[in-house]
Length: 333
Image (tube, rainbow, N blue to C red):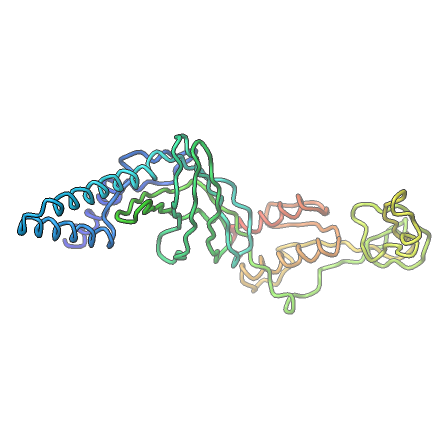
């Protein structure tokens, strides 16, 4: 019974009092009902001092004491208004979150827009929740202006990483009161599998295949001449002697060596080709490492993971498509 009542009270506090919501798409406006304000510790000490001054003024019938007490109380009331206004009617929106590898920090872009003429100062933003870092970022938003900042969350596993709930708080201008609000941005970052350690990763699964024209990515043997550099050529084959002889102002271009003969290598990164008893996450980590290595060595590679099959290619678009498939894979074997 006590557990049930505790859950009901917590649900009422979250939904009715603190206005906690699910992910809020688009731009969010912090209305008056979403901003809460209470005295801070210095504010409580200030209130105690006012009461003490008021009692002393009554006891000793001090006119100047009454004047000082009411003047300080008026300053506190003005501070309450300014603290609340510093946060109320602020427009919030979430930006893009770039993909990261598991174990890295996912960076979430946040945008604060001020549609009113008065500036906002000293607004602190930070993620809240179990396991969230205590680090907060401060932002100042000029009148009729915007401010942008990023908050980081450490990722632990692949897949979609939604942005945690954000708390905005401020004590501007005097610090006697603390105003805060909550926001759940509709943003998520794609987390790729963590690449396997390079020292324990087997070599790339290259399958040598002879081609009729004798050209290929690997196995170059006989030097045949030079030609202009093309996208995808290995940096190891650059003709540095010929490049050094060119006039850098007139002929600023790269030249690569051309070979004949040898064998080509077909590189296929296939989930089914990995050992059967290997854990799923270990397989995905190894495939991630192979993709990164193939891109670094400029080796076109085919990709196969369940029903997702990509022909041999190279480049950022092909790499993103393969890593995305690994990040969202839901198979069990």
